[in-house]
Image (cartoon, rainbow, N blue to C red; front, side, top):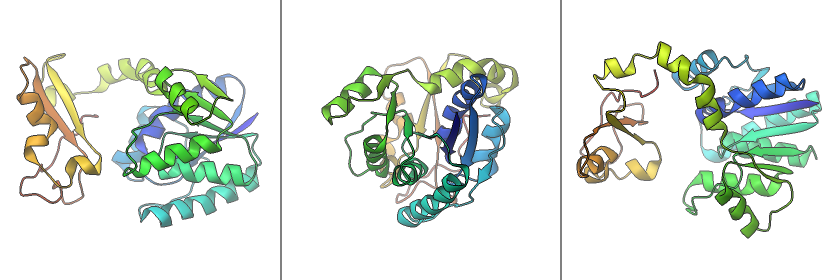
Length: 258
């Protein structure tokens, strides 16, 4: 069986590592398509190296841009790959623009579509990712859900066929690569942290950072709780190094991934 796997962003690379390994072990042919949604070394290449993911068969190089332009460019280029490869299945992950573009390209060409991490919902329609995940689920033939809650979400939307409760591929990746991280990573020493003696808070979604309210920062929330743990924040912020729209800023945030 030939499967075209579409990835483009950091979480998808992590999910694709155990999935691709399982597909190849089962004797299937995986054609890996990287849309280029995330494209620099720390956002893309490092994951392929550290998680031992094969080089993509296709790197579409779409890059950054407005949502409509980016998704449209991905759709055009993924369609060209699917027409050339003629796969039995298309496999998409998560809820990014790469996910939606892969789903639309597959369904328009009547190629069966499988969605890993199906059924997740934030119920916040201000999030572009919420629209991506809902639309992708309604296009999919196989829906691989990480939790029973995800299965129930799909059922409330009338989706019951092709739904499978399979667990979390992110957890599979942790099980596969935790020992590698323990052996290679120096992040705890670099940050002078004790093992199991800290809390990690991540800041990623725009509504966590714009407008910027210092009192709402996860590090502040941790400090306001009774805890013996040291809070540490890892923030994904604009290229100028500042959290947007506020007087306070996080400068030069320390990555939590070594």
